[in-house]
Structure formats: structure tokens, C-alpha cells
Length: 467
Image (cartoon, rainbow, N blue to C red; front, side, top):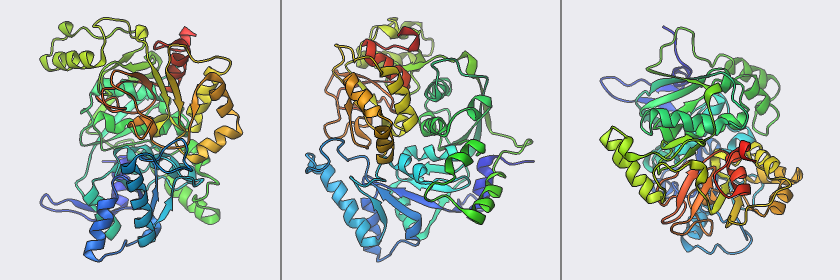
């Protein structure tokens, strides 16, 4: 029997196979770090009198707690400032490479690494952050780990794990106009539920996936965790190789040829068997927007908010009722009638250069609706920001009435001043819409950059067809 892409990468990193229910021991090629989940790991090493085993395979950046305005001034939030200075002190003490606020390579941990060519096919990549699944877009086995596991990887460059199950999500056909990778993954999560991928590595396959750019593939893999999966992967191909070639940490010369030969072997065998299979026809998709309080509560933009009384399953009915009540919506109202206060374009899901180009193209020549309180555009990394400014995208955003910010996680998790007040409603290109995610009492609707930009123009949730 053949093996899947995930199984091949796992086998290539197996240090020791577990027996009698014991976990396997895997070698970890790269660990990414940021200020939120690393302090306890550093302290654990310090107390044990240990040092990192391979500092050249550890790299850190500042992202969650970084302010996105006035970065040359003291951080107004004391807790955020402490976390950032703690990371700087720890990295200096242990000799770990750090890209701090103000550095040209600083950015969200899942955005800066691919840009530098650190993320490569066939690697095992971990980080104390659930959205590490982003890197699976390159054919890497990438997933989030806990704080104690961060310490273990720092000390040993290995990790004890039991093998994951495998899931194939086949997306065939061609996407309609105005439908994006974000809509694909929101539709998948709505179908399988927020726990549908639990314990699985999802491999995204099919013509619609192969047609996507690397930025779009990263969006897909990024949100695998929102469907409950441990990781998401896409087999590397010519699109992957073209993206990587020439990047600072990509192989060169003979090493490139060797790497390419290995990368081309990283695909699921024709006779491999997945534990779970999901099929999706891309041609039937529409822009998807969440109406509730988890990423699985999403519907086509042309649909209506659910009517709980019409839901047969008791648990789903109660969940819908609670979500509608929290979101301040009326059962049965058209999603397009929902007016928003704030638009957020950014995050590790949709803050890459392609996302900003798309939003700018729609906003150009328009001005934000009078009813919109603010529009925040936050690039996912400093290099994305610099590229956007070279292309003049920042001028389009500011002419539109948007705020052009520095790189960071920003309003995705409501950090520093980039947060909302109780009752404030946003359309957001980020990945989570939990209660209070963007600020205490805030209400979040997830969407693609296209829908976010169109909504900023009209004031109510909108698509390209409404402009």
C-alpha cells in the first residue's frame, strides 16, 4: 500500500518508532518562536542549566504584542512591553536569532519565514502557535505545540508524538469570479465542523488547489486548525519551486538541484489510503461570511442568518441561538443587510502582498462608507509592508480613508490599541471570530479580503457583485 504526503514526511524524520502505545520520536527541522509562548520554555532551560541543541534551527520574531503605530515610542501597554523585552533578553542570552520590532524581517511568525525561504517542502516545522499549519502550503509538516513542548524542542531538537490520522480534501473545478482561497477553507470548515478534522493532517488536493498561488495556499493551510486538524498540507509543485527560488534561505547551485529532486518525491502515492475523504466542487462556491461565533458558522453571502427553530439538532439549535444573541442579529435576516463598524484587513491568514493588492484594487477610486468607523490595513510582515509601499498600495489605502499600519497580529486578537469596544462589529480577514476575540464584547464576521474591501465601500456586508 502506498503512503500519503504526510506519512512520507513523518517517516523521513523518524528518530525512534514507538512500541506498545508509546509515541514516536520525530526530528524537528525548524522551530519558530515569538514572545507569547516562549518565556516559560526559556526559563525551563535556565533552571535545568541547559542550552538549545541547535540554535541555527531556532528563529524568533515579535508579532502578537507589537504595536502597529508609533513603533518608535514606548509601548503604551505594560504587559505587551514586558513580553517583548523578555523575548529580546532571552534570545540575547541563549544566542537565538531574533527579528524585533523595527527590523526589516520582523512580522507575524507564519508570514516572515516563507518570505525568507526558511519554510521549505518536506520539513518538520513547529511553533508555540496553532496557526503554524500555514507552512504546510509548501509541503511541510507544520503544527502548533505547547509551551513544555517548545522547551523540549529547544533542548533536543526532537518531539514525541503519536502518528496523526490523514484526511484528503479534494477541491476540483474552477473558482467563480470573486471567490477566493478564504472562501474555500471557510466552506470546508462549515461542512466538516470545527472538530471535523480532529487528530488529522488534512491534505488539500484537486485542480482548484493546484491553481492557487502560494499566498492563497497559505491561507488554506492556515485555517486547517479551525477545522480541528493538527496540520494542513499541499504537495509542492512548480508554483512552490518558483516561489522559493532565489529567496535568502533557499538552497542554491548543486544544493538546489538536490533539494528539488527530493521535493518532487513529496506527493501522495496513487494507491495510498486516507482515513477520511471530503470532496468539494469549487465551481459551486460563493463568497462565505461567518454569522456566528466560531469559524464553522459560515454561509454564502447571499444566504440569511439561520432561524434556530428550523434546526433539528438540539445542540446545533442552542449553539445558533447563543451565537445570534451574542452577535446582535435577527434570525432570518439577509447577511447582506448586516452593517459593520470596522474593517480589518490583515493577520497571518490574509495579510500577505497578494491580499493587499486585491483589497487595493477594489478600493481604488472609492472612499470608505460614512457609516464605517475605521478601516485598518495591517501587513503580515515588514517586507510585505515595504513591497506594498513600493507598489503605491499604501497611498490607495490612505486615500480610501483606511489606516496603513506596521506589521503585526494587530486586531486579529485585539492587541494594544488595535481592539474593539463592546458591541462594535467588524468584517475581518483574520481566522477566528470567538466571543471577545477582537476586544471584549466585540462581534466579528470572517471573510475574504474581497468581501472586506467591498463592505468597506458600502457599509454593509457586500461582494464584488454589489459594487
